[in-house]
Length: 105
Image (tube, rainbow, N blue to C red; front, side, top):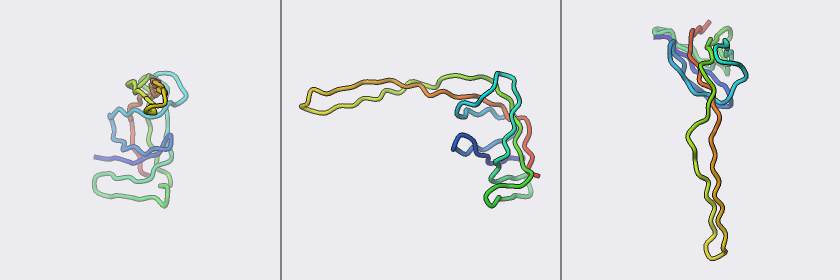
């Protein structure tokens, strides 16, 4: 099975055809096509290629499935004996993408 390691949003993801991934928010509506050219590593099942730092001609094609917010986390700051306590919630935005094609060039 062909797969590739690509970079987006400062993080690295393993892409295979048909897999859905949650990546940091990307611009575009649901159904929009995307192409990631920053491919670091790739394999077609028999051969593997590693970039220095990127693979030339390699790309990962995907489409946007939806945008959303992740699970809520609670940020709680506390200083004992100082009458100080702060509670804050946060939900990180994400874009869910489906991988359509992996080409390692």
